[in-house]
Amino acid sequence: MKTVWISLLTSAGFIGLITLIFRIFAENSIKTIFQKMIEKYKHKLNLIIEKSKFEFQRKITDFTLSIELKHSIYAKLFELIQIANGMLEGLIGFRPVPSFEEYGKDDIVKYLEDHEIVKGMIVELTEDWEKENKRSIEKIKEYLYMIDFQKANNARIDANNYFSKKLLYISDELELLIKDFFLSLAKMHVDWETQIVRKYHHKNIKEIFEEGKKKNELLKKIKDKMKGELSIDTSDYFNKTDSPSEKQEKD
Image (cartoon, rainbow, N blue to C red; front, side):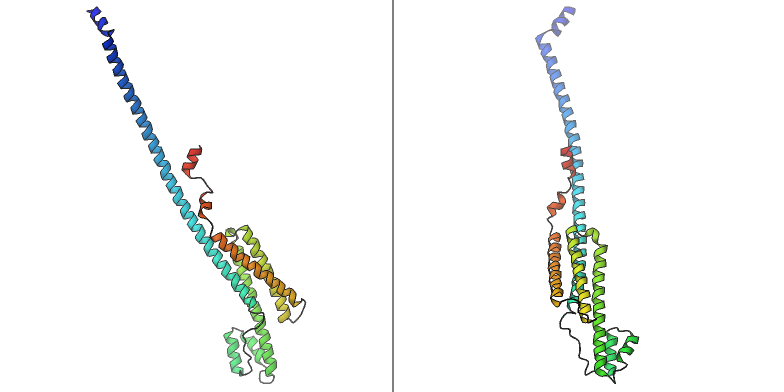
């Protein structure tokens, strides 16, 4: 009987059967291992994809908020710059101011009140209206001119203050252009006020107009630079940092 079992175990058919069983078992084991590996990799890949989607969405949101904020700041800043520039330019050359020759005292008082001139100053400006009408008119025009220069200067200060508060959002190149512009605007303000209000001709008119030309060139550069920055290519923004999937590939 022992001899029969030995003969059976050593027979080619039995060995082949055992080999087949091991082969099937091995193939199934390997297949199971690979399936588990694939499932694990798929799960990891899905996590990376979801994280990538989240990061991309975050970038879209950050970029949108950044551009909207920059649009808002640049629009407001340019508006204030234009107001300051326009108010000063409006004081140069022809100004639409009444002659006041046809005004009575009540009319001129109302005009000054409408222009928010303080009551004490109105009394001082009109006290000789009946006696020296022309001299009073001259005083009123000079005073209104001085007030307009103060308003123009306040507009420049307002624009400059807003610019200073928003420096964090302004590019270095644009910052330099705006600083040069405000410096030129301030020079022109002082020169024109000295010439017109104080009647002290310390500078040649040609020099002042040259400064005005420089100021206007700077204003154009500011406008072009702002428009250029606001039309920035979004791809520049998204290429600044790698996405999670790109980082995974590099690792």
